[in-house]
Amino acid sequence: MPQAGLHGLTGMAVSRFAGKREWLLLGIILGTMLPDMDNVAVAIATLAKADTHGLHRTFTHSIFFVAAIVAIFYFIGILRKQPRWTNLGIGLGIGVTLHILLDLLGWFNGVYILWPIDYELNFWKDTTPAAWFMKFMEPAELLMFAVFLYALGIWSRRYNTDSEYQSKLRNWMIFEFVLFLIFTPLAYVMKAGFLTIFGAIYLFSLFMVFFVTIRMRKTVDAAS
Image (cartoon, rainbow, N blue to C red; front, top):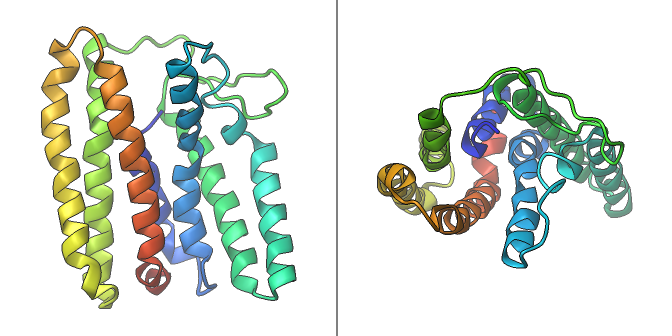
């Protein structure tokens, strides 16, 4: 899969097309990262020594998941009489769709876009990437988180929003970059236990970036 931070940057890149609908761009950016939270299920199964097959790039990467999210937030918007919730749902649907497309175009594993129907779409099934490249892709997750947080900081300064949070944002960005520097050599020299330790750091980082984005929703709205 392309890095979650790269997915988030993809969501930021479409800001000019989001218009001024409250929480729509927020939904798009969050939606680009949301599907990779299926790694929580992978982590739980791994700790339980259970089969992890069918847990990644399946239920959160399906067009039916997209439809369910849009429908749920549509009804929340009606019940609360607040269109921003409907906008959020539409944005999440757009973001998840962008995530699926980027996974299909930019990675070497297939996506079960019709889950629970057992159909895997893979444009790269005959491609075998170099082993060194695949090892680097793990710590690169942390690098892309840092880049995504850096981009949020640029928006915050440009639109003069969430100024009270900029120092914490900078600290999180530095934290992710330092982790990248630490885990890059470990990916090549650590023979056992690397994925367990890295997986825990990755999930923490993914949720941290997700909630930092929510915390900076004023900045995100200002950018649309």
